[in-house]
Image (tube, rainbow, N blue to C red; front, side, top):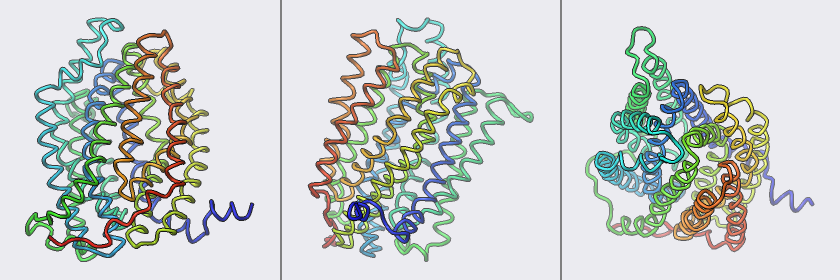
Length: 468
């Protein structure tokens, strides 16, 4: 028993070092998700169709966000290991790569939204389950919302470039403060612009979008200004903008390692959006209920998300320092810690699930469905924490093709067929469909355990970095 305890539980010094990295990320993500919840509630107070219209747009923007995360993730794998090796020039190269990639993706994303946005939104509107009036109203709100949100895509991407690089080198305070500023701006803007408070125009969903865009530009402005003023603290910033040259050999390495990760995040987000599209077969009430569930779940899942990032960063730094046994030991203890903590949080979600939907101005049937969805989400949170931790562990050693199979292919081959078949060929409610889709992670957990035990993920990728 003492041997097992030693393997799964770390020392006080171990948890102190973990919390030093973890707490700022939890605070940042926690406040962000809390404001997202308030933002969602404020729009939800306008009614079911405005909330559904915004939720549909956010499903599509989610794909853009995950494409950015995926593209930056490949560079971040090298950035964390370069940081562990104290190779500041290597970190600088990865930041340049991120910036170029983000600008290109933003241009493509805006073009797609302008040309095909309405067609994408209509995929979530089921004519058999909703009236023509409801569909027309929801589509109108979606178009109104996206017209403004497009102006926030670029600052969002730039923020992710700098925030992810700073986290790679262990700096989590600056991104946290930047998020706090954005949150205050967003929340204030929502209050003033959605309802027209203190003489401001009453803009509804357009006000929510405008507040979000202003907040993202404010966040970017602060993050760039603060990091540049403290550039001596971050040697990788020195000479960053003199040119945008990145050694071709490193570009190839990032491309080879990061392309599966990019495809994984992009295709996984499309698969997740497709799963939600299946839920929409049950009508706009299902869209509204799943929107409430996902927004509330994101708030409660912040520890899970932060733990996943921490596992990736800490294991990546240890692998970069060529401490393979230390990386394995750290991962094992962090996974155990994450599952235990999220079991408690999951129980809390189940306990408060009957009360949360009442903060929305929506129909009783939507509230009831949202309550049941939250109960399912809370019950499966420990399992989700384990699978996400496994994903970041495998990714930290550069096994991105395996993570592509583990995450994206699993969603398309297992989760999406379950959702589609149950929605199309059975009369099961959206709650039961959601339950069976969530339960599929049991299989993923088994696959992930095999990969962890095999140790194939524990690889130092930056032992010898080519210069040209």
